[in-house]
Image 1 (cartoon, rainbow, N blue to C red):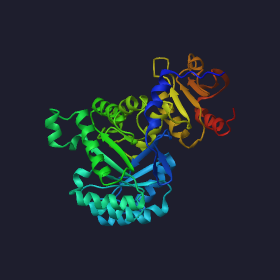
Image 2 (cartoon, rainbow, N blue to C red; image 1 turned 45 degrees about the horizontal axis):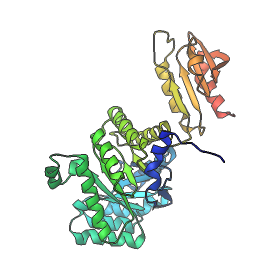
Image 3 (tube, rainbow, N blue to C red; image 1 turned 60 degrees about the vertical axis):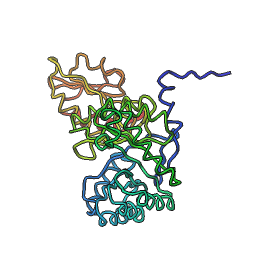
Image 4 (tube, helix red, strand yellow; image 1 turned 45 degrees about the vertical axis):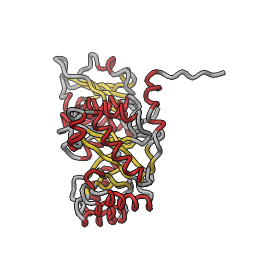
Amino acid sequence: MTYVFLTERQIRMSTYREHTKVIQIGDRKIGGGNPILIQSMTNTKTEDVQATTEQILALEKAGCDIIRCAVPTMEAAQALKEIKKQIHIPLVADIHFDYRLAIAAMENGADKIRINPGNIGSIQRIKAVVDVAKERNIPIRVGVNSGSLEKDLVEKYHGVTAEGLVESALDKVHIIEELGYDNLVISIKSSDVLMCARAHELIAQKTRYPLHVGITEAGTLYSGNIKSAIGLGIILYQGIGDTIRVSLTGAPLEEVKSAKRILKTLGLRKGGVEVVSCPTCGRTRIDLIGLANQVETMVQDIPLDIKVAVMGCVVNGPGEAKEADIGIAGGDGVGLLIKKGEVVRKIPEDQLLAVLREELMNWSE
């Protein structure tokens, strides 16, 4: 008899995610233990088909799995039809206030819609949206943000709280369920990292619908990445979350890069070169910061699942890089190429980057 022993971490990370409902979005699936998918949102005017399509194609190449577009006008809804013809990943239409835009978006090819039933209007308008979604089997993402929590729930919980967010989201879900539809994804977001984490812990115990996870209004590239990494890390580590977005005040490409790194760091996604580098110190004799950034940029298009180390001196570099598959270290005009902690050869410092790329492009185990 063979026994398989799971670590506490493996048990935790499989608890909720493996038991969520499987939802089909275009040709992708989330929930039920399927891989966590990365989302981003275009920042072009959706009415501009060319600009929007070009941005989506760039995001696809970077590793985006699902893309969301704002649909504030009927022209934007109609533009989805042309955009869909030119992209290869599922498209989500982001709708606020006007139920007619949600219907038009679905009629023009949206693979999923994102709505807040609370700002769509009357139950008749919500039903009109649900009827079209049901007819076409299009998932609905029910989104609730802390900034738009209903006044009665704020009063009930004496402020904006995790408990209030969960109750608000489940209320919206129940409205759609009562209309006979359960092809749903839930999103509860807050810019308060710990509140957001707590809300996900609570809702994961109350529903089997897959969860779209993110820290809303996280901030700039610097602060937004820190808040998102902490928040998503807490939530995903508990086995909660089926699809994610890193919301940054910056280029959508940066959102995808950050999301991939978060998933890889948590062991939830494989593939892609991981770059590790030492901190600068008084022994550093090269432009370590510049070199590390160059390496990180260079490896973006290299489809390997390995670890690359960039070290700032030849003294401790080989030892510090021993857990990496390959690395470079340099100083005083001389550089080292290192594999598994062993020095392979010395090379001129100004050739380090080129030699490393050549090694990676011809990599074999």
